[in-house]
View 1 (tube, rainbow, N blue to C red):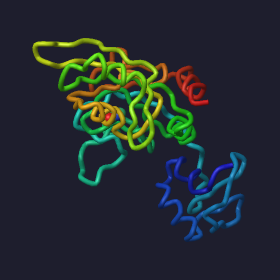
View 2 (view 1 turned 30 degrees about the horizontal axis):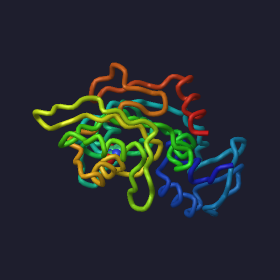
View 3 (view 1 turned 90 degrees about the horizontal axis):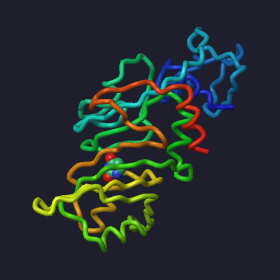
View 4 (view 1 turned 180 degrees about the horizontal axis):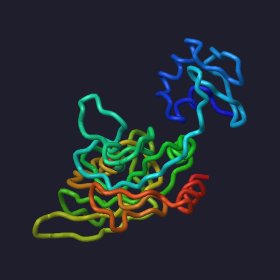
Length: 237
Ligand code: URA
């Protein structure tokens, strides 16, 4: 059972807020009866009509995008900046699963499958995400050990599943660290390194669950296969 406004929104008829307005305005019927209660729950068997038209359940779509730098990862932006949704050629109302910062590049999934998005974004269902971070100076062996054992950010310890010093350039005093975490707090990687005294000059997400960027160039995307979607559902359990 799902809330009526959510079903209307995921059918692509209107945004969630507009769907609520339509319900309150008496424009929505469930099995022939006008329903004005916002909390009404409906199932897949219920016939829902909006302004006299029966709505059909929208097909679910799943995309994997290699997000470029300088793009916001929301569906719309108040400042009219380019959003990741602008890269995808679809007429469906899609949104990203989680966020990457404006200046972070790499793997992000977009879908209209709210159930999968909720499962994957729920803190207790953390799937592994791998990031490659270029730091403003070479990380010391001690800090690398501290990083591996976990760094507290806002009172919660972020314990990586894996940390690997990929390369270091002593002359330029820069290094590249690969780090895998399961949590999804905003700016978490930058904040973890900040706590240790490093700035992240460049950040890329290279893996989400078992999905990788493969050969996708910046700004390119592909659709996920049915098997990949199933694996994402399994990973979120
Ligand atoms: N952590 C960050 O600091 N930024 C991101 O974009 C993702 C994870």
